[in-house]
Length: 200
Image (cartoon, rainbow, N blue to C red):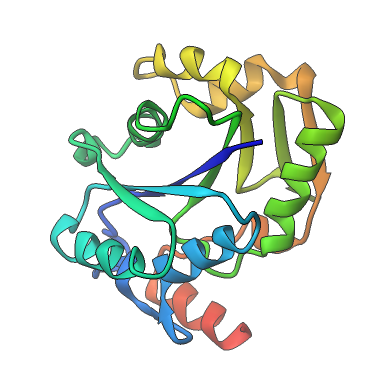
């Protein structure tokens, strides 16, 4: 079965004060760690990185990562509105026709685990659910997985609708996968970046 992943990396990094995606993380960058983690989850996973803010430097980083990882860039021209929905729609519209489902990941979660993505994919194949979401203490996290049957509904959404509206509308069919706290942790400020780096 063929899968794709979308990394939402179009934010403006206003609270950080510098592009989050290109900050150092281990031997790579924040974005590089997220991409490598997803790539480790499935041998044939195609990864689309949706860019927007600081596109010049983030595009260079995507090109660097593409030398060793299955990543490619899609630009979200509506990124300055700050809505994640537009980035997700740009990513979904760019996915191949044979992808059975898409993993939706945040570009600022470098502490995420490949095991979480693997468990979502495994549960998708064994349980046939259309929506699978990792949770920690009953809170929804990332990455989450959505069957391609639901993509047209997401693509048809318009602001002020958000992904929360979509997930709430399908709450009865969501399959939750218990996970650790990393599914909730993203990096928005220099303080969070320093704290999470020290925790690695």
